[in-house]
Length: 412
Ligand code: AMP
Ligand code: MG
Image 1 (cartoon, protein in one colour):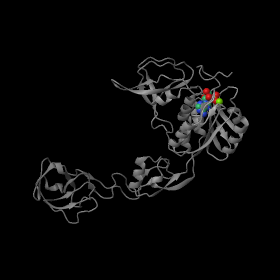
Image 2: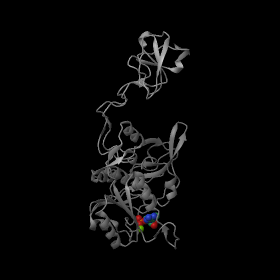
Image 3: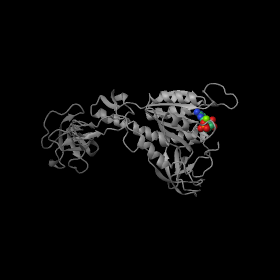
Image 4: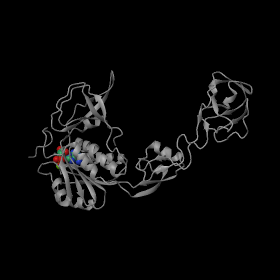
């Protein structure tokens, strides 16, 4: 009964990966409460409202180059230079026929001019410039509203503010921005064998690595991570902690105690304290994964094997958190199709999330599974740059097979 996870048969009582993800996303209701933050404090937060451009960007026609602004109607005839327009210091006079002004990148284009000639395409002789290549009317000008027209949505609600989006808001003059509040996520690990890092181990004990992996994953996602520590395999204590936390947070995550071993009680506790949607999936690694609700919190009971904890987080918890944080779809990471440089070992029955590396092949990118694919070998996960996703029904695959790949960098 206590044997779990490493046999590779389809379990008819378990959900498919696709079904499980659909159930989880369906149950994940986006946050609505918002708060105002100064722009620079809003990195990685999610916009509560559409951000609309009030005025055009650029607000004035300006030069895309350092060069000379002039009227194209005078053709290629040399021009007399009558002034300068610097960024922030416009040229105040008129530019007449046969004249030009020196203009810098970003400086306002005088009303009389319609063209900028790049400095490299001119030769200066005192106050006169000659052109070394044919004039292109309208060249090198940034038009009004080319970036954003007034009333245009610069960034829609649900956008996560990465560095470029912060830049866009600054270009609109936004100093304070309304963002959704942070998702409150509490987590703890379970297991009599677990000890805190920094201490010494007795026979049979291991360091509690999952809690540190989870904290790191949650921080990367921008959640408010609430570390509830580590609990022994004592269903009463675990039950009390779950009951209390379920009324105070948005999401509750545990690791361990979720398979079918004698000390695995999480699914039963979940049933008693709240509701269970499912607790088994046909995936590898990570067959046991309990999902349900306790109090006002969505609950994820992740498997204890360190690789399974991380893989199930990437595949199920991260998309759910993104949706609940108010992010726009898609909530799952994009998939690339890449050839696998080596054969892939796989038994039919479960969807495999093999840990892989990217290789530079003769015809472009390739992937290969890392050597250590067992769910207790955390260094295999740490070597990985990507997941190779092999469908449930698939068996062994020869080298050269195109497989679905998700890059880890950027996934959380
Ligand atoms: P469980 O899901 O509780 O049956 O645990 C499965 C395996 O993962 C066992 O080898 C546990 O010792 C290990 N494990 C469980 N929790 C953790 C943790 N927090 N950190 C590291 N390993 C763990
Ligand atoms: Mg355990």
